Length: 381
Ligand code: SAH
Image (tube, rainbow, N blue to C red; front, side, top):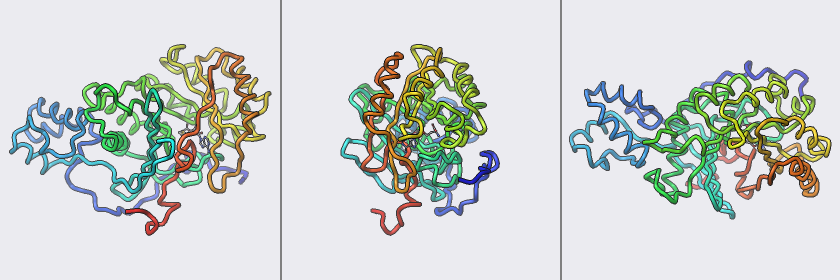
């Protein structure tokens, strides 16, 4: 490891990416918030109620063709289609795990790609959404961290992942009872709090009661600890917070989560104490990856309990998911059991996260754009 790791902000520069597909001229309605859609409709001389109708068709019913908008006259449907489109990211590959997890590799209009994962469980179905192409954080145990950061995703690309999953699951309109897709975790590729504005805009669209209508209680944003953005996230969005803690000393965390060199554990824990809306009913989740011989001793477990004292917290131990060339090993089952027992004795219930989708490299920390690992010629059409 180099002695001087460049500071995150210094590497925070996008490299230009040549568009693979020319950008369409018609504006995509997906990704527009109410104010933008209202302005676009006003510009066409259309009354506000038209925007509301279209909002409902696009975000609540998930239609992609203006011809399906049956409460809008044919002539106006034509005008809308001339000015707008209702686009999704393109699916490059879809992989299904033996446990039912589905991973999509999605391509955007400039040719960049991310992965989105749907994880069905008995009582819920969770979509793991990406916020960036690549990541700046270079966490040592994370596969995405080995891929260089390319760019932030825009609101349309974040909302687009959600809409695409609903399309694939056949779950429009969004609000009907008995939906499999019930929750969102911002835990895919990227650091959502380093793309705060776009993530916030996207989540507000997703939370709109007359649209996709997923409540903030069903949405969890996971951060490696971008301390200055945490307060705002709680105040403006009020979503559940998950924090990728992974170590109890700055010495260890500096190495495995290099962002810690900028925001130390004490600062991060204080930001958690101050997180708006956290309560015993809405606890902060602390994620902790189990790395053999690195952070998994009894002493670490006891220190963890002490560190979180007084915070309304849930623990989430993640067995390390290996990836080709990964520099760590997962702690043994007996070690994980022992570690979790210490947490349970301190009052944390069932803290080990079940690994899902490992056979298709869809588990935590295994996501990486296939553009880097699979040649075009090897991909299924
Ligand atoms: N940047 C955000 C979002 C990524 S979330 C964050 O750091 O929270 C993905 C979660 O999986 C994080 O807790 C991450 O630290 C964890 N993770 C990454 N690589 C992993 C791996 N190989 N095995 C298990 N968990 C991993």
